[in-house]
Length: 200
Image 1 (tube, rainbow, N blue to C red):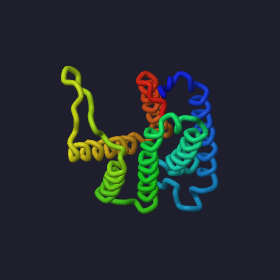
Image 2 (cartoon, rainbow, N blue to C red; image 1 turned 45 degrees about the vertical axis):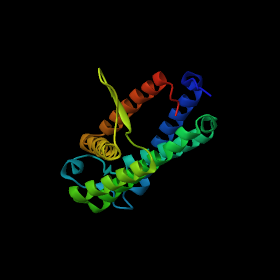
Image 3 (tube, helix red, strand yellow; image 1 turned 90 degrees about the horizontal axis):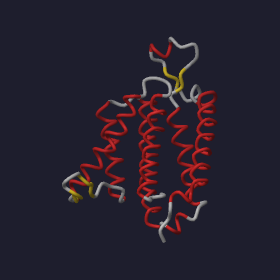
Image 4 (cartoon, one colour; image 1 turned 135 degrees about the vertical axis):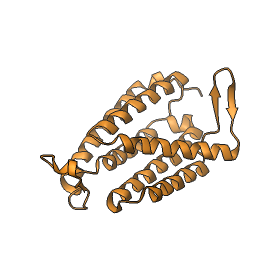
């Protein structure tokens, strides 16, 4: 049964607001009550120049809040019944995101070497590809749809995961930069999904 994404305006708006509020609450909770207890305060020279301690838990709060809201919003709507295959495809993506977040947390606590962190990120990406969330094809202007072989699909998927994850790591040098970039990217994908008629 075809679904018009524009029919889900309230559902999308409620999901966004729930994720926003949950992120704000969890960020404050983690910053004020969790970071110092578990040793996740930034002790770099730039952080020490601040008037207040900088907690390295913003990403954890965002990941936790958005994951819970995403699962709840999906299964509190009729979308799983209308799009069972697409709903199943969200599972490896969500677990991949949580696993990437876990690697980031581990890096914050243990200060992993770049090579080791990249290796763990690549393992997560391979697992997500194996679970079925992967690049299978893409469209090029004047060429059309290019179908990827299994190996090429694996390479593209792993490179995409590594590029996106570490691009956000690199821009996370000031308050709000990574979060703002994530919001902008997500908004762009949301508009594309509406245009393509893909509500999930």
